[in-house]
Length: 331
Ligand code: SAM
Image (cartoon, rainbow, N blue to C red; front, side, top):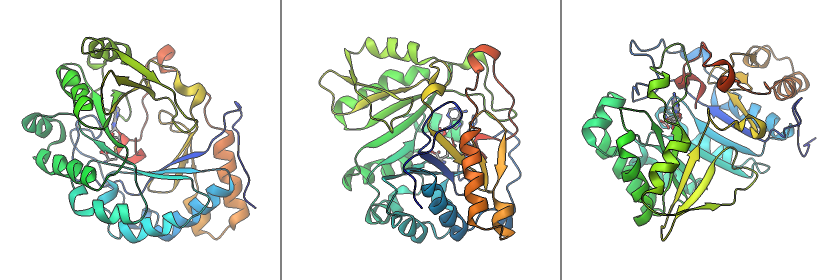
């Protein structure tokens, strides 16, 4: 039976699943993986595509209507396109989107579009090739930029560009990124740097709030607010006067967005996680592989939804140490 919606213990309707399909990545972003790297999961510990599809169908029964594929880097996983085709056949999903670093996008964009995906998020933290290399550890700026152009040619709409803003690293490019929206229909999403994982280089000195970003962009022109829809989550959207694209501010830390957070996450190894910043997880892979049956699995999904932490509390208690790195949760 498909139910319309499920609420957690705080009354929030949880309808959005962020699904990490791999912990592997072809970049080494300083804020995502620790400097010394991480031990990747053995392949046998990662959910197979069949297992993922099974769990998504059950999640739909628990009220999930939107899925975002993430990673690691989702495009590096073998067999991604056939998997995406199967996912897109799950009718009750109203929206399927994808977050990618864009390195493999030029080659795969047409196939992704042919599956029926029209919306895409591409991460890009610098418009300067050398700085891109410093942040990501790979000399791939041109490939990512070509991937963005290709997505434009194929009329993905919107093309969202995710920028993690870090003081002293790329905050001097806020205006350049904002200017992009004057010429291109991109949604440039400025994301506050988050303290996730054991050591991702976060410090209060590296943090730039969405308030500061708003102020800086205000020097470029008037920012007119755009109304949000129910699947937008914590994003605050604006249009610079005369612009073709949008400016989006994601105040993950400063903006108390927990009250309207409607997300559930599933890591590549099959753990359900209610909050990015909390290591409270439910292992759904073991019972799935132990043939415990769909009723049991569905019950676990409902439990993960019910017990979603009410808030991350970082603004009051300071950054938490969570064991998982962002690369293994999926952002
Ligand atoms: N590899 C894909 C990519 O680069 O978009 C998907 C995974 S990545 C973990 C998803 C998003 O999380 C990216 O936009 C990335 O910039 C963002 N992210 C990773 N670590 C972050 C952090 N510490 N603070 C804010 N955003 C972060």
